[in-house]
Length: 142
Image (tube, rainbow, N blue to C red; front, side, top):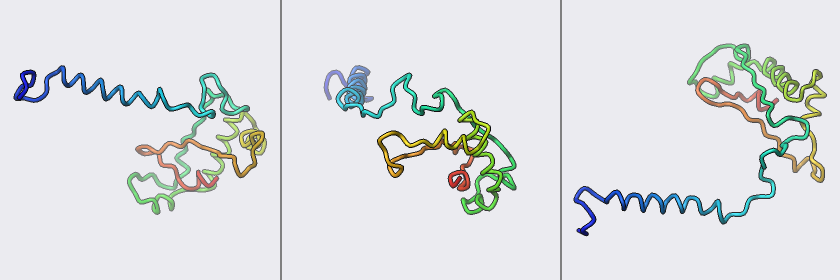
């Protein structure tokens, strides 16, 4: 046993050395890996027609015929009311685009970036899937 080691394990100094070395190794990729050109920059607008500070959400108990947690996906799918969900997703689009007409809202939201074909366009929708909030297939299908 070395003089600086105790029978109980490494010293506080040895622990700090290992911890600092680990933190430094963790930070190295951030220093040496170049950022992607597409990376978001503070103040940048992700969508030309929507404020980056605008957030919309909806909670409607009528989207399912019964409220049950911890059931199989198949049983969850049996509970959804697709018509109510489709209407609510359209309402969310109108709120996000700040439009009254559903068609105008979707046209404002789903735009083709210049220089890209529609086959290259990616659309992302952030859904919440925690605790009692479950994203059902009709939401994604709409």
